[in-house]
Amino acid sequence: MKKKKEKNGKNYSMQTRLIYGKSISKKWDYNHHVVPPISSSATFRLDTAKRGAQGFMEFAHHNGEKTVESRAPIYIYDRLGEPNKELLEENLAAAETGESAVTFCTGMAAISAIFGALTGSDDEIIAHSVLYGCTYSLLTNWYPRYRINTKFIDLINPNNLKKEISLKTRVVYFETPVNPTLDLIDISAISKIVKSANKNRPKGREIYLVIDNTFATPFCQRPIELGADFTVESLTKGITGFGTDMGGVVVGPKWSYDLLLMYRKDFGGVLAAKSAWPIMVYGLPSLPIRFKQSMKSALEVAKFLESDSRVNYVRYPGLESFPQPELARRQLIDYDGNFAPGVLLYFAFKGKTPKKRKEKGEKFINYLAKKAYTITLAVSLGMIRTLIEHPSSMTHAAIPPEEQIAKGIDPGGIRLSIGIEKVEDIINDLKKALSKI
Ligand SMILES: *Cc1c(COP(=O)(O)O)cnc(C)c1O
Image 1 (spheres, rainbow, N blue to C red):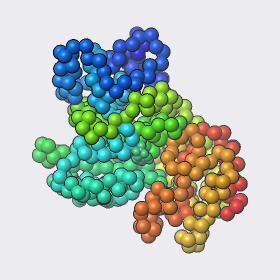
Image 2 (image 1 turned 120 degrees about the vertical axis):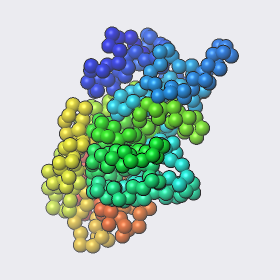
Image 3 (image 1 turned 30 degrees about the horizontal axis):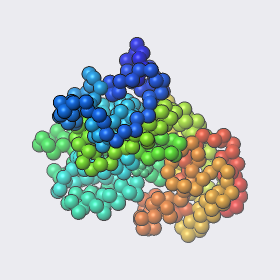
Image 4 (image 1 turned 180 degrees about the vertical axis):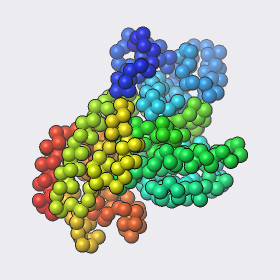
């Protein structure tokens, strides 16, 4: 990258570092571009057989050293590594304040890679009882085939974890804020329990704490700073932000770098360079400014909805009525230490029966889907456009209705992901829809 005196920006704020990355990177030797060039080459010229042999020998042999090499790596084949992905990975590791990052083609590819890399047959995963639908399906439909079972427990109370840990446990896994209820799980408290359990375990049977940070993004929450071993993230959501690309990342300790590169090489879920490039050039650099704008609006929208007599409750970590205010202010903070309650909110309408509430939710959503200019009915989140969805019948439809209610998912509950539109416009669209229910 463009040469500057300051080598890696460590003395600058993260908002600035997400734009420049490492101003001098050994990942690719070009000097006169301002924007890193897009690289699209499935295979790489090796010059001599010796250089080819060296490239193969060096692949995934960092041996726990820092991922920064003293010279540009010898690229061989895109599935092993190529410059755009690796530049993005350096920036993602910095954003999550982790030691190394490995990207994947989707969030699910990243999640399955970290489970695959850390567990084997007869190992056990402990996970929170409410998870992203496909993660839940991965753990319940596929892993049992390899005798990897998951215990689903309520981690909102961290004390529930202690009695569930056994010698089989290898991974503790959760999302916080929880989707869609926005309940928070205390990362530091869970990390303490995991670390204390690890003291008495034989080598090779350590438990790793893995957190899906997709909802908050590293702008609002850095699990590794709070004691997690790994962060996984769907880049498709808040980090890409413009809704143009899919991607995933695992950020973790430097010893995991080679392991994850090997896993990615053999399972094959690589992030395309054509997707790595926009995420690096547009998505990550604009994350702070997009999220600051969206968060300001999210609070206003949350307050507006809370003041409406038709609304039963609004869940947004920035509201005074939020059930876990102390944890929210301790855990959801931006790089400058400001409270950063995120861009998602969840709310439900009043109604005597679950059926009534469901009807109201659907009517409201259908009106917006047809008429609203600023609010789009679509899954995904963290985009510059405001998105709405109905978890009970869409993202969480796999959970039976009675179980949904027990897990805090209201039959008519609505999830909103606030974009960067002018907030008055979002509220106007919501007002019109409210008048129809
Ligand atoms: C979207 C999402 C994923 C999966 O990411 P993809 O990029 O769609 O594969 C995982 N976890 C959470 C919390 C998500 O919102």
